[in-house]
Image (cartoon, rainbow, N blue to C red; front, top):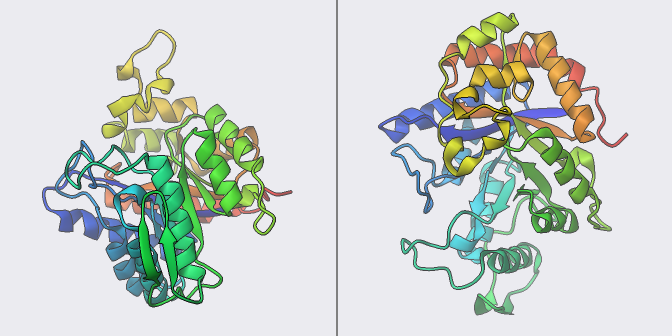
Length: 345
């Protein structure tokens, strides 16, 4: 198993710079600890919960972070393809690939909504648009000569991009996967990395991984080691210290749309779904190094194994010093035991 961050930015600062600086400090610390990758949430594009410190352009953040880190790979989590021209996306990825020295990970997804008038209504179904955009982007990256394109959504002649990506034959691509069978199958068939959010419960993650593993690609087979699963992880010296540190945490907008409703205990209410209760129930992983290791190992076994654990970052869950201590304890006392797990064995 490998380890990284999913910087799911939501701090609520009144000035974006404050949040961006905090997010950047977390990525730099993760790199210093030896984490392998970081995915930066791209929020603010036509969302109903836009805030002053949203991150609408993860690529700019990633290129700055690349200059301050040494090894960590980074990607947007995710660029909503239906809202951008595919040739521009292909170009942006190629430039970021060069600027990061090959440490860039492309991140694709559907996004939310149908345009809302802010960019004009989308000209087609989002899934149709995403599928065509992916084909066009891959063509831009790999075609040795300019080409014509006559698709359902986009048409053009003599298309090409400069520069071509640094990473050959193409950059690695992650794709946001929900419980939708179509997206999971697409990830497998295209040889993309499946990115799984921190909201789904254990049984949902298990089902998603099973669907992904059924997909076929002769060149890049679906393997559990290629899957990325985001989870809430917080390590302190003791269980009691972890509960004390996070007892006043506000879980925030995940309540919108009922994305945490499946954690409501039988006969309970949303008031029962607190950070501490979720850690005590084992749905979130918080406590001493031993407690967190045992919880994550059980989760890993229950879902059938996965490749990279992405720890949720980008939120003011605890102070910066507490989060820094948590990740240091995790990488020193928990990660070495989990690193031995081989999801493909």
